Structures are given as structure tokens and as C-alpha cells.
Image 1 (cartoon, helix red, strand yellow):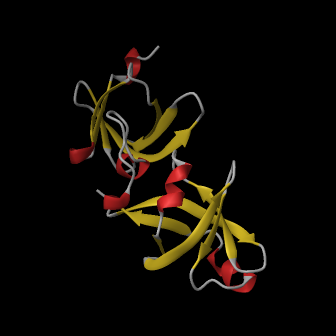
Image 2: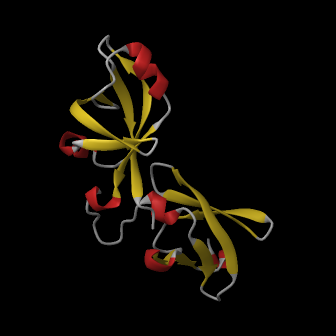
Length: 163
């Protein structure tokens, strides 16, 4: 499992005092209110304050004092140590843990490795690469029968049975 989890991406500057706009990469945007520190490029940064808006977070990071400094952080990711991550409900998993997991079907046929997770609105889709082709696996209980994140393993029903 990854030591750090990504919670947001810096998308631009905000204002004249070095504030940054962050696109949240978490279901719980309220978690930003509790952040005291984040990691940017593996360097610990102190969070001075944040303001939650409907589609973004405005943050002030210690040491970023101007738009000229802030713009250098554009497109960088904010990370937190795993031990500071939010607690997930049973049956929910961090995308960082799903990506890289091996996918097999119930007949133990190797399907491939999760390359990415696509968010469609109705259900997530696991983009699985392997065996010379890509397979899009809907993250539905009727298709995904087992999630074993301790062993990086996802078991699905055989593709030919999906309908």
C-alpha cells in the first residue's frame, strides 16, 4: 500500500498573496479544514488556512507569498500520510490502492492489472490492462465479487457472463 494518498491537485493561483486553488481528489472536501500539513513534491508544507468552495478549495500554504511563487506549484499534487487519511466505510477503497491491483476472474484466469479508475457518475469503471487488450470492468457488486486490497487482488465474474 502507498505511504501517501493524494487529496488534491493545485490548478491555479488565487489572489495576490500567494493563495492556491486546489481541485479536490477526495469524496470528503471537509477534510481540508482539518489539514495542518500537506506534502508537495514529498516536502512537508504547513497549511495556514483554507476555504471550501463548491468545486474547489482555496488554500494558503506557508512560504508561498506571491502569485509568482504560487504559479510554480500549478499541476502539483497535495498528499497526506496514509495514517492521516479519512476512515472509509466497509467496502470502500482508496483509488491509490485499487490502481496496480491484479484482476482475475472466478475461474482464476488472469485478466490484467488495474491501470486507472474512471469515474462515470453512476458507477466507477476499472480500466484493466493485460493479455494484449484492455478491459473496462464496471465496479458493480454483480461483477466484482472480491476486493482483497491487502493482497492487491480483485476477483470478477468471467467476462463472458456479463450481460
